[in-house]
Length: 432
Image (tube, rainbow, N blue to C red; front, side, top):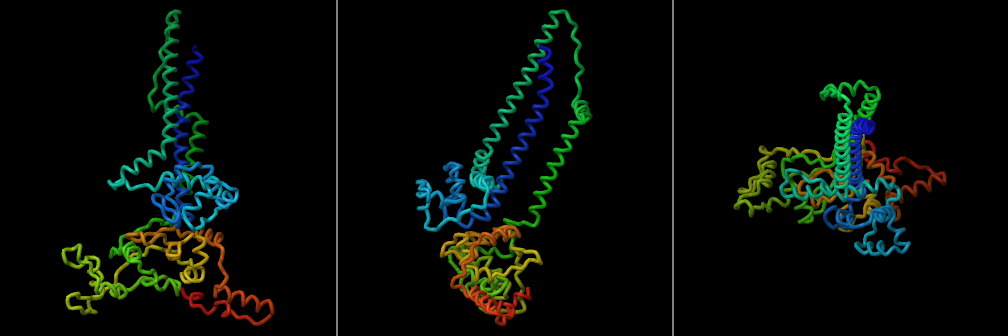
Protein backbone atom coordinates (compact mmCIF):
# COMPACT_ATOMS: atom_id res chain seq x y z
CA UNK A 1 0.00 0.00 0.00
CA UNK A 2 2.84 2.37 0.86
CA UNK A 3 4.45 1.68 -2.51
CA UNK A 4 1.23 2.59 -4.31
CA UNK A 5 0.98 5.84 -2.36
CA UNK A 6 4.55 6.80 -3.19
CA UNK A 7 4.03 6.03 -6.88
CA UNK A 8 0.87 8.14 -7.08
CA UNK A 9 2.51 11.02 -5.22
CA UNK A 10 5.41 10.99 -7.64
CA UNK A 11 3.30 10.60 -10.74
CA UNK A 12 0.54 13.16 -10.31
CA UNK A 13 2.81 16.22 -10.51
CA UNK A 14 4.47 14.91 -13.65
CA UNK A 15 1.05 14.07 -15.09
CA UNK A 16 -0.17 17.58 -14.36
CA UNK A 17 2.85 19.15 -16.09
CA UNK A 18 2.51 16.81 -19.06
CA UNK A 19 -1.17 17.67 -19.36
CA UNK A 20 -0.59 21.40 -19.28
CA UNK A 21 2.12 21.15 -21.91
CA UNK A 22 -0.05 18.88 -24.07
CA UNK A 23 -2.95 21.33 -23.99
CA UNK A 24 -0.64 24.22 -24.89
CA UNK A 25 0.99 22.29 -27.75
CA UNK A 26 -2.35 21.07 -29.16
CA UNK A 27 -3.85 24.57 -28.91
CA UNK A 28 -0.81 26.16 -30.59
CA UNK A 29 -0.80 23.52 -33.33
CA UNK A 30 -4.48 24.01 -34.14
CA UNK A 31 -4.08 27.79 -34.07
CA UNK A 32 -1.14 27.55 -36.46
CA UNK A 33 -3.15 25.24 -38.75
CA UNK A 34 -5.94 27.81 -38.96
CA UNK A 35 -3.44 30.62 -39.64
CA UNK A 36 -1.82 28.62 -42.44
CA UNK A 37 -5.26 27.67 -43.78
CA UNK A 38 -6.31 31.32 -43.90
CA UNK A 39 -3.21 32.23 -45.92
CA UNK A 40 -3.78 29.42 -48.41
CA UNK A 41 -7.50 30.27 -48.66
CA UNK A 42 -6.79 33.97 -49.36
CA UNK A 43 -4.17 32.99 -51.95
CA UNK A 44 -5.95 30.21 -53.85
CA UNK A 45 -9.65 30.06 -52.96
CA UNK A 46 -10.98 33.53 -52.17
CA UNK A 47 -11.40 34.65 -55.79
CA UNK A 48 -14.29 32.17 -56.15
CA UNK A 49 -15.36 31.28 -52.61
CA UNK A 50 -16.71 33.22 -49.63
CA UNK A 51 -16.99 31.67 -46.17
CA UNK A 52 -20.45 32.90 -45.29
CA UNK A 53 -22.24 33.31 -48.63
CA UNK A 54 -22.47 31.80 -52.09
CA UNK A 55 -20.25 33.29 -54.78
CA UNK A 56 -18.80 31.57 -57.84
CA UNK A 57 -18.62 28.57 -55.51
CA UNK A 58 -20.78 27.70 -52.47
CA UNK A 59 -20.38 29.23 -49.00
CA UNK A 60 -17.55 27.13 -47.59
CA UNK A 61 -18.18 27.23 -43.84
CA UNK A 62 -21.60 25.58 -44.08
CA UNK A 63 -20.60 23.26 -46.93
CA UNK A 64 -17.41 21.88 -45.34
CA UNK A 65 -19.20 21.29 -42.05
CA UNK A 66 -21.56 19.00 -44.01
CA UNK A 67 -18.96 17.11 -46.07
CA UNK A 68 -16.76 14.19 -45.06
CA UNK A 69 -13.21 15.52 -44.65
CA UNK A 70 -11.56 12.66 -46.59
CA UNK A 71 -13.87 13.28 -49.55
CA UNK A 72 -13.34 17.04 -49.33
CA UNK A 73 -9.55 16.56 -49.52
CA UNK A 74 -9.89 14.49 -52.69
CA UNK A 75 -12.31 17.05 -54.20
CA UNK A 76 -10.05 20.03 -53.50
CA UNK A 77 -6.92 18.31 -54.79
CA UNK A 78 -8.43 17.02 -58.04
CA UNK A 79 -12.20 17.16 -58.44
CA UNK A 80 -11.89 16.08 -62.08
CA UNK A 81 -10.49 12.69 -61.01
CA UNK A 82 -13.58 12.12 -58.82
CA UNK A 83 -15.92 13.06 -61.68
CA UNK A 84 -14.03 10.81 -64.14
CA UNK A 85 -14.31 7.98 -61.60
CA UNK A 86 -18.09 8.39 -61.59
CA UNK A 87 -18.41 9.72 -58.04
CA UNK A 88 -22.10 10.78 -57.78
CA UNK A 89 -21.44 13.40 -55.11
CA UNK A 90 -18.74 15.00 -57.26
CA UNK A 91 -20.92 14.99 -60.37
CA UNK A 92 -23.72 16.66 -58.41
CA UNK A 93 -21.31 19.27 -57.02
CA UNK A 94 -20.25 20.35 -60.52
CA UNK A 95 -23.81 21.53 -61.18
CA UNK A 96 -23.48 24.41 -58.70
CA UNK A 97 -21.66 26.70 -61.14
CA UNK A 98 -20.80 26.61 -64.86
CA UNK A 99 -17.26 27.77 -64.01
CA UNK A 100 -14.68 25.03 -63.58
CA UNK A 101 -12.90 24.94 -60.24
CA UNK A 102 -9.09 24.90 -60.29
CA UNK A 103 -7.29 21.74 -59.18
CA UNK A 104 -4.56 21.86 -56.53
CA UNK A 105 -2.34 18.77 -56.89
CA UNK A 106 0.56 20.69 -55.34
CA UNK A 107 -1.17 20.99 -51.94
CA UNK A 108 -0.41 18.36 -49.30
CA UNK A 109 -3.09 16.69 -47.18
CA UNK A 110 -2.00 18.78 -44.18
CA UNK A 111 -2.30 22.04 -46.12
CA UNK A 112 -5.79 21.12 -47.34
CA UNK A 113 -6.77 20.15 -43.79
CA UNK A 114 -5.56 23.58 -42.65
CA UNK A 115 -7.82 25.25 -45.22
CA UNK A 116 -10.75 23.10 -44.10
CA UNK A 117 -10.05 23.95 -40.43
CA UNK A 118 -10.03 27.68 -41.24
CA UNK A 119 -13.18 27.45 -43.36
CA UNK A 120 -15.04 25.52 -40.66
CA UNK A 121 -14.01 27.97 -37.94
CA UNK A 122 -14.82 30.99 -40.09
CA UNK A 123 -13.23 34.43 -40.04
CA UNK A 124 -12.74 35.73 -36.47
CA UNK A 125 -15.22 38.48 -35.59
CA UNK A 126 -14.34 41.68 -33.78
CA UNK A 127 -15.11 41.30 -30.08
CA UNK A 128 -16.40 44.87 -29.80
CA UNK A 129 -19.00 44.39 -32.52
CA UNK A 130 -22.29 43.69 -30.68
CA UNK A 131 -23.97 42.56 -33.88
CA UNK A 132 -21.50 39.72 -34.38
CA UNK A 133 -20.45 38.92 -30.82
CA UNK A 134 -22.88 36.00 -30.55
CA UNK A 135 -21.82 34.53 -33.88
CA UNK A 136 -18.14 34.85 -32.97
CA UNK A 137 -18.72 33.10 -29.67
CA UNK A 138 -20.57 30.27 -31.42
CA UNK A 139 -17.80 29.86 -33.99
CA UNK A 140 -15.08 29.76 -31.33
CA UNK A 141 -17.14 27.30 -29.30
CA UNK A 142 -17.44 24.91 -32.24
CA UNK A 143 -13.81 25.24 -33.35
CA UNK A 144 -12.44 24.75 -29.80
CA UNK A 145 -14.86 22.00 -28.79
CA UNK A 146 -12.45 19.12 -29.37
CA UNK A 147 -9.58 20.80 -27.47
CA UNK A 148 -11.86 21.71 -24.57
CA UNK A 149 -13.13 18.12 -24.41
CA UNK A 150 -9.63 16.64 -24.36
CA UNK A 151 -8.48 19.14 -21.74
CA UNK A 152 -11.52 18.39 -19.56
CA UNK A 153 -10.91 14.63 -19.71
CA UNK A 154 -7.25 15.05 -18.77
CA UNK A 155 -8.05 17.43 -15.91
CA UNK A 156 -10.67 15.02 -14.56
CA UNK A 157 -8.09 12.22 -14.75
CA UNK A 158 -5.60 14.31 -12.76
CA UNK A 159 -8.27 15.12 -10.18
CA UNK A 160 -9.04 11.41 -9.83
CA UNK A 161 -5.32 10.65 -9.35
CA UNK A 162 -5.04 13.33 -6.66
CA UNK A 163 -8.13 12.05 -4.81
CA UNK A 164 -6.89 8.45 -5.01
CA UNK A 165 -3.50 9.55 -3.74
CA UNK A 166 -5.04 11.24 -0.72
CA UNK A 167 -7.34 8.25 -0.07
CA UNK A 168 -4.40 5.84 -0.20
CA UNK A 169 -2.41 8.07 2.14
CA UNK A 170 -5.32 8.17 4.61
CA UNK A 171 -5.72 4.37 4.53
CA UNK A 172 -1.99 3.95 5.01
CA UNK A 173 -2.03 6.16 8.10
CA UNK A 174 -4.98 4.23 9.55
CA UNK A 175 -3.23 0.87 9.06
CA UNK A 176 0.02 2.12 10.57
CA UNK A 177 -1.88 3.60 13.52
CA UNK A 178 -3.60 0.26 14.22
CA UNK A 179 -0.23 -1.46 14.09
CA UNK A 180 1.10 0.97 16.69
CA UNK A 181 3.62 2.51 14.37
CA UNK A 182 4.45 6.11 15.20
CA UNK A 183 3.59 8.35 12.27
CA UNK A 184 6.06 11.11 11.52
CA UNK A 185 4.35 14.04 9.88
CA UNK A 186 5.98 15.12 6.63
CA UNK A 187 7.21 18.66 6.52
CA UNK A 188 5.03 20.64 4.14
CA UNK A 189 7.01 22.81 1.78
CA UNK A 190 5.91 26.14 0.41
CA UNK A 191 5.36 26.75 -3.29
CA UNK A 192 8.65 28.67 -3.47
CA UNK A 193 10.55 25.79 -1.83
CA UNK A 194 8.95 23.28 -4.19
CA UNK A 195 9.88 25.47 -7.16
CA UNK A 196 13.50 25.77 -5.99
CA UNK A 197 13.68 21.99 -5.53
CA UNK A 198 12.37 21.44 -9.07
CA UNK A 199 14.97 23.78 -10.58
CA UNK A 200 17.76 21.95 -8.75
CA UNK A 201 16.83 18.87 -10.81
CA UNK A 202 19.15 18.92 -13.86
CA UNK A 203 16.75 16.90 -16.03
CA UNK A 204 13.89 19.30 -15.34
CA UNK A 205 16.11 22.33 -16.03
CA UNK A 206 17.26 20.78 -19.33
CA UNK A 207 13.66 20.02 -20.33
CA UNK A 208 12.52 23.53 -19.34
CA UNK A 209 15.32 25.25 -21.30
CA UNK A 210 14.66 23.04 -24.34
CA UNK A 211 10.94 23.86 -24.23
CA UNK A 212 11.69 27.57 -23.83
CA UNK A 213 14.06 27.56 -26.84
CA UNK A 214 11.46 25.75 -29.00
CA UNK A 215 8.67 28.15 -27.97
CA UNK A 216 10.74 31.31 -28.48
CA UNK A 217 12.15 29.97 -31.75
CA UNK A 218 8.65 29.18 -33.04
CA UNK A 219 7.26 32.60 -32.12
CA UNK A 220 10.34 34.30 -33.56
CA UNK A 221 10.09 32.36 -36.81
CA UNK A 222 6.39 33.14 -37.20
CA UNK A 223 7.03 36.78 -36.40
CA UNK A 224 9.84 37.12 -38.94
CA UNK A 225 7.87 35.21 -41.59
CA UNK A 226 4.99 37.68 -41.28
CA UNK A 227 7.14 40.81 -41.12
CA UNK A 228 6.08 43.23 -43.83
CA UNK A 229 2.92 41.26 -44.66
CA UNK A 230 -0.01 43.65 -44.39
CA UNK A 231 -3.00 41.56 -45.46
CA UNK A 232 -6.13 43.34 -44.26
CA UNK A 233 -4.34 46.72 -43.94
CA UNK A 234 -7.03 49.42 -44.07
CA UNK A 235 -5.78 52.92 -43.23
CA UNK A 236 -8.14 55.82 -42.54
CA UNK A 237 -8.43 57.89 -45.72
CA UNK A 238 -9.08 61.67 -45.90
CA UNK A 239 -12.24 60.97 -47.94
CA UNK A 240 -14.41 57.91 -47.26
CA UNK A 241 -14.57 56.75 -50.85
CA UNK A 242 -16.83 53.70 -51.19
CA UNK A 243 -15.77 51.16 -53.83
CA UNK A 244 -18.92 49.21 -52.99
CA UNK A 245 -21.08 52.15 -54.08
CA UNK A 246 -19.08 53.16 -57.16
CA UNK A 247 -17.78 49.83 -58.53
CA UNK A 248 -20.59 47.69 -57.09
CA UNK A 249 -23.92 49.52 -57.03
CA UNK A 250 -23.15 51.97 -59.86
CA UNK A 251 -20.94 49.47 -61.76
CA UNK A 252 -18.35 52.05 -62.81
CA UNK A 253 -15.53 50.33 -64.69
CA UNK A 254 -12.19 50.19 -62.87
CA UNK A 255 -10.31 51.79 -65.77
CA UNK A 256 -12.51 54.90 -65.66
CA UNK A 257 -10.67 55.97 -62.51
CA UNK A 258 -7.54 53.80 -62.70
CA UNK A 259 -6.74 54.24 -66.39
CA UNK A 260 -3.01 53.77 -65.79
CA UNK A 261 -3.48 50.09 -64.92
CA UNK A 262 -4.25 49.32 -68.56
CA UNK A 263 -1.40 51.23 -70.17
CA UNK A 264 1.43 51.76 -67.67
CA UNK A 265 3.31 50.36 -64.70
CA UNK A 266 1.19 52.21 -62.14
CA UNK A 267 -2.57 51.98 -61.72
CA UNK A 268 -2.63 55.70 -60.75
CA UNK A 269 -4.93 57.42 -58.29
CA UNK A 270 -7.52 59.52 -60.15
CA UNK A 271 -7.31 63.29 -59.84
CA UNK A 272 -10.15 65.22 -58.25
CA UNK A 273 -11.09 66.40 -61.77
CA UNK A 274 -12.17 62.83 -62.54
CA UNK A 275 -14.43 62.89 -59.47
CA UNK A 276 -15.91 66.19 -60.62
CA UNK A 277 -17.02 64.65 -63.92
CA UNK A 278 -19.90 63.16 -61.93
CA UNK A 279 -19.97 65.07 -58.66
CA UNK A 280 -20.40 68.45 -60.27
CA UNK A 281 -23.99 67.26 -60.62
CA UNK A 282 -24.27 64.39 -58.12
CA UNK A 283 -24.16 65.86 -54.61
CA UNK A 284 -26.04 63.29 -52.47
CA UNK A 285 -28.20 65.72 -50.47
CA UNK A 286 -31.04 63.32 -49.59
CA UNK A 287 -29.51 61.96 -46.38
CA UNK A 288 -28.22 65.32 -45.11
CA UNK A 289 -31.35 67.48 -44.82
CA UNK A 290 -30.79 69.07 -48.21
CA UNK A 291 -27.12 69.81 -47.52
CA UNK A 292 -24.31 68.43 -49.70
CA UNK A 293 -22.75 65.18 -48.50
CA UNK A 294 -19.74 65.95 -46.22
CA UNK A 295 -17.53 63.60 -48.26
CA UNK A 296 -18.46 65.28 -51.56
CA UNK A 297 -17.89 68.65 -49.91
CA UNK A 298 -14.30 67.51 -49.23
CA UNK A 299 -13.86 67.06 -53.01
CA UNK A 300 -15.17 70.59 -53.62
CA UNK A 301 -12.83 71.97 -50.96
CA UNK A 302 -9.82 70.18 -52.46
CA UNK A 303 -10.44 71.60 -55.95
CA UNK A 304 -11.62 75.03 -54.79
CA UNK A 305 -15.12 74.61 -56.22
CA UNK A 306 -18.12 76.67 -55.10
CA UNK A 307 -21.32 74.67 -55.80
CA UNK A 308 -23.47 77.82 -55.40
CA UNK A 309 -21.73 79.88 -58.08
CA UNK A 310 -20.40 76.88 -60.05
CA UNK A 311 -16.95 78.49 -60.15
CA UNK A 312 -13.41 77.37 -59.32
CA UNK A 313 -10.88 79.28 -57.21
CA UNK A 314 -7.36 78.03 -57.91
CA UNK A 315 -5.99 79.83 -54.84
CA UNK A 316 -8.03 77.47 -52.63
CA UNK A 317 -6.88 74.24 -54.28
CA UNK A 318 -5.07 71.70 -52.12
CA UNK A 319 -4.21 68.06 -52.85
CA UNK A 320 -6.07 65.16 -51.24
CA UNK A 321 -3.51 63.33 -49.09
CA UNK A 322 -4.53 59.74 -49.79
CA UNK A 323 -2.82 57.02 -47.73
CA UNK A 324 -1.21 54.33 -49.87
CA UNK A 325 -2.69 50.88 -49.21
CA UNK A 326 -0.73 48.54 -51.49
CA UNK A 327 3.00 48.95 -50.89
CA UNK A 328 5.77 46.99 -52.59
CA UNK A 329 9.47 47.24 -51.69
CA UNK A 330 11.44 49.76 -53.74
CA UNK A 331 13.47 46.96 -55.34
CA UNK A 332 10.35 45.11 -56.54
CA UNK A 333 9.18 45.87 -60.09
CA UNK A 334 5.54 45.29 -60.92
CA UNK A 335 3.90 46.34 -64.18
CA UNK A 336 0.11 46.64 -64.05
CA UNK A 337 -0.40 46.76 -67.82
CA UNK A 338 1.60 43.57 -68.37
CA UNK A 339 -0.74 41.69 -66.05
CA UNK A 340 -4.01 43.49 -66.80
CA UNK A 341 -3.67 43.47 -70.60
CA UNK A 342 -1.11 40.87 -71.73
CA UNK A 343 -1.86 38.22 -69.10
CA UNK A 344 -5.56 38.99 -68.62
CA UNK A 345 -6.92 35.74 -70.09
CA UNK A 346 -4.29 33.63 -68.32
CA UNK A 347 -5.05 35.21 -64.95
CA UNK A 348 -8.81 34.99 -65.46
CA UNK A 349 -8.62 31.27 -66.14
CA UNK A 350 -6.19 30.59 -63.28
CA UNK A 351 -8.31 32.48 -60.73
CA UNK A 352 -11.71 31.36 -62.07
CA UNK A 353 -13.02 34.90 -62.61
CA UNK A 354 -16.43 35.44 -64.18
CA UNK A 355 -16.76 37.43 -67.46
CA UNK A 356 -18.39 40.33 -65.60
CA UNK A 357 -15.58 40.47 -63.01
CA UNK A 358 -12.55 42.66 -63.79
CA UNK A 359 -9.13 40.99 -63.79
CA UNK A 360 -8.23 43.36 -60.93
CA UNK A 361 -10.12 41.02 -58.57
CA UNK A 362 -7.33 38.43 -58.91
CA UNK A 363 -5.00 40.50 -56.71
CA UNK A 364 -7.20 43.16 -55.13
CA UNK A 365 -10.10 40.87 -54.26
CA UNK A 366 -13.82 41.68 -54.60
CA UNK A 367 -13.34 45.46 -54.61
CA UNK A 368 -17.00 45.97 -55.54
CA UNK A 369 -17.98 44.77 -52.04
CA UNK A 370 -15.52 46.94 -50.08
CA UNK A 371 -17.00 49.95 -48.33
CA UNK A 372 -13.43 51.15 -47.80
CA UNK A 373 -10.48 49.66 -49.66
CA UNK A 374 -8.07 47.34 -47.85
CA UNK A 375 -5.17 45.09 -48.84
CA UNK A 376 -6.74 41.80 -49.85
CA UNK A 377 -3.69 39.71 -50.86
CA UNK A 378 -0.37 39.32 -48.99
CA UNK A 379 1.66 40.64 -51.98
CA UNK A 380 4.71 38.70 -50.80
CA UNK A 381 7.38 37.32 -53.13
CA UNK A 382 6.22 33.77 -52.35
CA UNK A 383 2.64 34.70 -53.28
CA UNK A 384 3.76 36.15 -56.62
CA UNK A 385 6.08 33.22 -57.38
CA UNK A 386 3.36 30.65 -56.65
CA UNK A 387 1.04 32.45 -59.08
CA UNK A 388 3.75 32.48 -61.75
CA UNK A 389 4.34 28.75 -61.22
CA UNK A 390 0.68 27.73 -61.35
CA UNK A 391 -0.75 30.01 -64.07
CA UNK A 392 -0.79 28.57 -67.59
CA UNK A 393 -0.14 31.22 -70.24
CA UNK A 394 -2.83 31.69 -72.89
CA UNK A 395 -0.59 32.59 -75.85
CA UNK A 396 -2.91 31.88 -78.76
CA UNK A 397 -4.05 35.10 -80.43
CA UNK A 398 -2.06 37.23 -77.99
CA UNK A 399 -0.14 39.96 -79.87
CA UNK A 400 2.53 40.18 -77.17
CA UNK A 401 3.46 36.50 -77.44
CA UNK A 402 3.07 36.55 -81.23
CA UNK A 403 5.92 39.07 -81.36
CA UNK A 404 8.08 36.89 -79.10
CA UNK A 405 7.43 33.80 -81.27
CA UNK A 406 8.23 35.83 -84.38
CA UNK A 407 11.50 37.00 -82.82
CA UNK A 408 12.42 33.42 -81.87
CA UNK A 409 11.80 32.26 -85.42
CA UNK A 410 14.19 34.96 -86.69
CA UNK A 411 16.82 33.82 -84.18
CA UNK A 412 16.47 30.23 -85.43
CA UNK A 413 17.02 31.41 -89.02
CA UNK A 414 20.08 33.44 -88.03
CA UNK A 415 18.44 36.74 -88.93
CA UNK A 416 19.29 40.02 -87.23
CA UNK A 417 17.35 40.66 -84.02
CA UNK A 418 17.51 43.74 -81.78
CA UNK A 419 16.38 44.39 -78.18
CA UNK A 420 13.72 46.71 -79.62
CA UNK A 421 11.99 43.70 -81.21
CA UNK A 422 11.74 42.10 -77.75
CA UNK A 423 10.11 45.11 -76.11
CA UNK A 424 13.33 46.93 -75.31
CA UNK A 425 11.80 50.31 -76.18
CA UNK A 426 9.11 50.10 -73.48
CA UNK A 427 9.47 52.97 -70.99
CA UNK A 428 9.00 50.65 -68.03
CA UNK A 429 12.16 48.69 -68.89
CA UNK A 430 14.23 51.58 -67.52
CA UNK A 431 11.89 54.08 -65.86
CA UNK A 432 10.08 53.19 -62.65
